[in-house]
Length: 406
Ligand SMILES: *[C@@H]1O[C@H](CO)[C@@H](O)[C@H](O)[C@H]1NC(C)=O
Ligand SMILES: *[C@@H]1O[C@H](CO)[C@@H](O)[C@H](O)[C@H]1NC(C)=O
Ligand SMILES: *[C@@H]1O[C@H](CO)[C@@H](O)[C@H](O)[C@H]1NC(C)=O
Ligand SMILES: *[C@@H]1O[C@H](CO)[C@@H](O)[C@H](O)[C@H]1NC(C)=O
Image 1 (cartoon, rainbow, N blue to C red):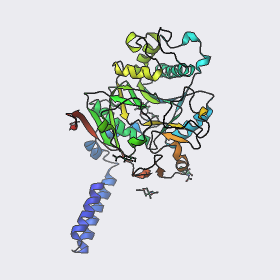
Image 2: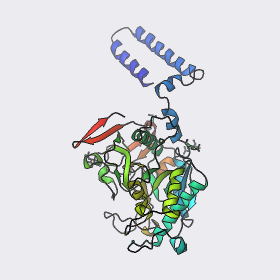
Image 3: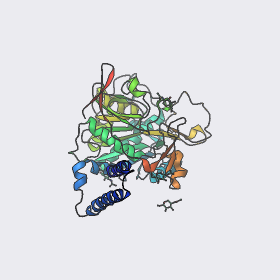
Image 4: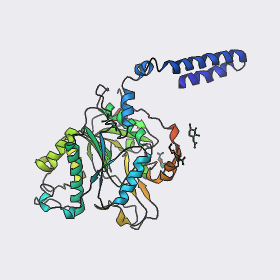
């Protein structure tokens, strides 16, 4: 009831020099109104709320459920990497969502007959065994979406990190995703009804030029100077991309790195078709790589899939302390800035209030989390103060950014 509160304080200011009695009476009246409102709610459910926000509350609520508004969350994990499973299990339990596991695949153990189609084409770049295994592991996750007939699923890799405020970020993402779809909420689907793939964890995107993009203030967005190296971009335009504390949500024409993405059931069917059963030329042009994430980006680019993403990425990467050999079973994405030695401390890349680095606080039910990025205006965040924020739709015009009606 912020309006009631501010009314009280305003009244107090105006009445300061007058009768204290009047103030007492006014306060009592306000309190009575407040009391009545609170107490009639069980009997007259929702009329106030439904008038103000007809559908919003229900879809925002769904985004905060145990599976983040998707039907399932599938995490790809090599059975031998129990260490990574420990981390994801603990992190997800502390930030309150539930994960199902999909077994990762070692490329060396695969029958070459089951390798990605068209891999052997003349002039096609070769794939490392780890990349072939990763392709198959993602295929298995996609196959599971189809076999279990999941209406939607979030597929994640097991070396990711995410913000402690992920649920709040996803509520904001849902608002943005619906705005760029012009979905005013008739479909009860939390992220809107007109998408195939939500690319939540990436290392670079390009927004669809020409389409409006959604932009909002976001104190959890990683300052631009501290983002890991992005291999795609700019997302919109250098000036938009470089603004700290903002997040852009848009339809994308390309992306790379498949840390986390959500699929609809139909999109999973389409992916099984193009990636395995009936591949087509445009998806795998001669001479081009067919590594899983590159292929996924190409499918967004050619319009085979409708893809929506956020800049910066919502999901980042996590490296436990110790030898570098522990990090990836595919290949190391070399960040030129990183020295090639073992890490003394666990490191988080691409998220601000890292779940993995705040685990001691979260286990103690602490509400004050720390930024894993140095040199920020808000190094500590009180979780009790976090609320979803809304942004608006914008477009680029004559070199400037123009707000348009949502
Ligand atoms: C969360 O919400 C989604 C979307 O409505 C739904 O499909 C899913 O079953 C819900 N998850 C749980 C655990 O209730
Ligand atoms: C944290 O909260 C849980 C559940 O509310 C409770 O069981 C646990 O004892 C609390 N831990 C601490 C350290 O306060
Ligand atoms: C953006 O944030 C970084 C890190 O906090 C800071 O060093 C930089 O000055 C900020 N840039 C602007 C334009 O405010
Ligand atoms: C966080 O904010 C809540 C409510 O605003 C407050 O009660 C609590 O004391 C704050 N916690 C810390 C550690 O500052």
